[in-house]
Image 1 (cartoon, one colour):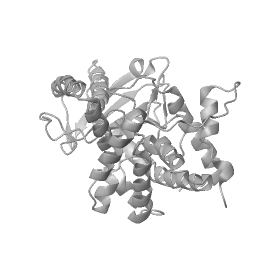
Image 2 (cartoon, one colour):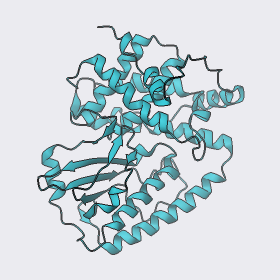
Image 3 (cartoon, rainbow, N blue to C red):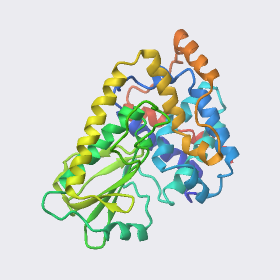
Image 4 (tube, rainbow, N blue to C red):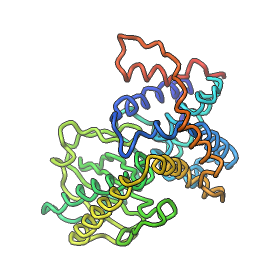
Length: 355
């Protein structure tokens, strides 16, 4: 748990979430999640909260780490959590409490590192950073650029499986500073073969999980928002790159193996994207619902439950798509505020906290 005052946590949460929500692209592939998931969003949030409360993980950081894969998994659900609670017209004091519950889990998954709006995304304790930097690398003869290419390909690959839910595949963290002035960025990839979500896909040639580590000189100047989006205005990720490695389990990949994996991933992206593009709008909506329930699959696995949405929810989704979304209540926006400033205000439930 964070030692920071609860009211400050809620204010910092609002300011942090407003950045990725405010800067999100207006167009999403294959569609914007909110345009199709709205009929069942509140059901997802009800299930998530009920399962967290029933799981026995509250107040137990080690159990949070067993039930969830990483902090981004919770962060990227956070604005949906707020929206779902608002859909159900939950008291704002209760919304504040549920946000704090989410922040408890995030604190556990970040090993106590406090979150930043845009900045370092630290997860590893110092002893683990030392182990990461001690692993043999590719060598400084331009081979490290292939690591950036592979990481970019895997990020794109996450979209053809999970649409906007990148966190189901990717957790990028760092930059970790080491005593000699270098910086380390760690990219963890998981769930690369979701056969239970896409049973007819051929995932041959891919690992289920892997790690890519890049080592940079002191010129590196990047940050991550809480949704794990990279900010690198001056392109220092590439220009500061010195070395790195890729590892699957205990096996370090050779340069040729990295090149082969890049080719395999790009081929899968092309094949799977064409498949999605041929799906009907209704089929995409139902797959999106499955993806959103898959976002809490690690929790349901921990509890020994089935992750899939019920048949009843399929009917609720179909009926809701026919009716369309509820007309949004008119919000009083301050004309002098930026979008991010307004969203910061909208997501700030600190005044409703009951001590």
